Length: 430
Image 1 (cartoon, one colour):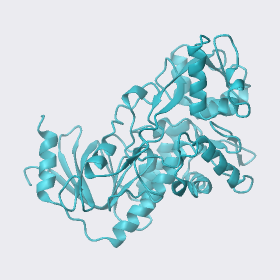
Image 2 (cartoon, helix red, strand yellow):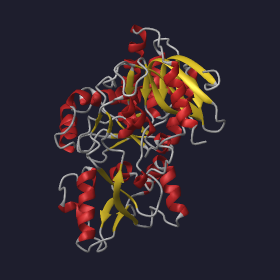
Image 3 (cartoon, one colour):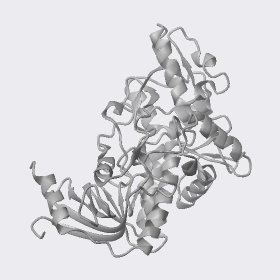
Image 4 (cartoon, helix red, strand yellow):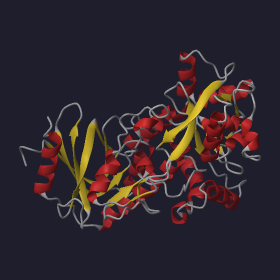
């Protein structure tokens, strides 16, 4: 073992992935006083897609909104395939998470002391609050809160496999930690943990135009699958519109919330015929199908048109989508004067992943999942609660569940033979 493992780290709660789900899981778990460690193959708060979030978070106003109508929208957009146990309580939790974020220092756009809210994709009664400087500002503040809470950060280390109490993959026991290596140093790592939370996200290669994160290679889902986790909803292939020529997020929630429209090559606002109530704010599945039909029937390409918006709307869009607007500018385009060509593409920001219950627990004791690594069972076919907020809530729930498991569990153990073999397998090609 001494020749194989360069460094051993013992912790109560191990969190794999340092995006918004992982960070909120860590913050929640630390409330119990347990030792909590986040390991990320890049930098916590800067890896994955959280820092590129499209500038909005779903927010239920308990003083003004009807929760029943919100849940109806979720079920309608999900086409009846939502996991109702997972969905239960999520609408109300959006308010709790926004209040926490603001208390930690996250800045939202306000008017006369109240959140500026805009309806987004799939929304009729639901709404979003707008982030100042988008996900970059959000994750900077959250990273600071993680550090303030005393969470240990292990960065530039890639976790490759889970450890199990019986030393088997798949296991009939429980998850007791993980192994990995330093992506720059080549050091091998052994992590022992009372509980483990996978929040490492996932992006398919075909989605690089909308989420250019080559680090999101699906290794979290793969290690869970090898350990024997159930997977769910991967057959629900998810399409979403995005800018044709640019490697950036689509920004649909804030763009359509502010009043941008979709037109075809003839200048026709074709979504009026597809969803007479929400129009462009129709669920992504409806919008993508409509765009495909426009192109198949010879009326393409299609464009996102924000040129008619007033100056206040453009300022809010630029505040919420700094990466998107800068990307357009580098391509010589401006939302103020140019229609931007959009198409639809396969994306993995929809359903599909590690099956987890309402507490984030998987079918293997000691293993939890949240964020884009999990199956987003509450969504069904399409989502009304945005994935940024879903990751906030999922991470919070998983952090709570994992810490409770660690508090009632025995001291984690592992099989030296399993750890050695997994590390040797990782380094063998080198």
